[in-house]
Length: 159
Image (cartoon, rainbow, N blue to C red; front, top):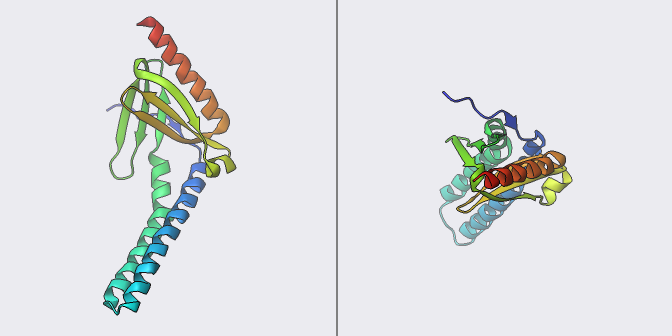
């Protein structure tokens, strides 16, 4: 069996993903509350309200406590001279190999939550798709972006 990639993303990703989970939970609770109010106004069945509350609690726990931890434990990457390997997935583990010869350009992206925690994501673009390495420390993301783009240029010159 092949060894899995060795590099992990920043542990601060847990905090960022939990904050995103809170935002998602607030949106879900707002929708559920609206549905419950409408059910009450139009005298709908009470069991639907109970199911919405139970589902809200379950999804809140999943989005804030469970999924970020599982996601962080599974997320790994490794950059080699000829390829980039990514491993991710909570229930279904996906391992992706991106040949350096296919890399067209590399970006770093930083939204407001990532910026607050001094994190950035690296996005590797190929002709067909893009691959993201999320939540790396800012300096690590910048170094990785330069390193991958340098490797992609060297491989392109060899072709």
